[in-house]
Length: 172
Image (tube, rainbow, N blue to C red; front, top):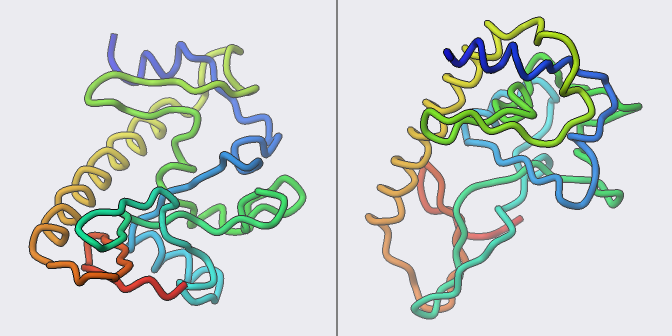
């Protein structure tokens, strides 16, 4: 079965419920390129829309993490969610474009979502393109972030966020 056929068979149609953008476990990882797009679309600065990925590693007297997540409100909802609608929909990150789907290598993963299980997925062809673009972007981000991590030494007592563009002292 092709990826498009698997997507079609999943029977996904977004119900507009906003559950994917809500709750305390709602961590949306974003790349520096996606941050740039969102900042331009929303007219905000990076520190206003992202925070370091919340899993910190303590090693060799330094503290560090890899990547960024979108900020959430006190209710745990994505900062761009208003009245169950995305205010940056046309500029949303890969993870949002492809939810509830993800590729693990070539294997399609489907997460629990009220929109699954209905008739054929109407936009399976576009979803396939978005999933493949997401996998490519995530693979590139991973490799570039790994390079940045390997070329930067950490100073005792430092707190650093690594991404594909470098090592950033924690200031958010």
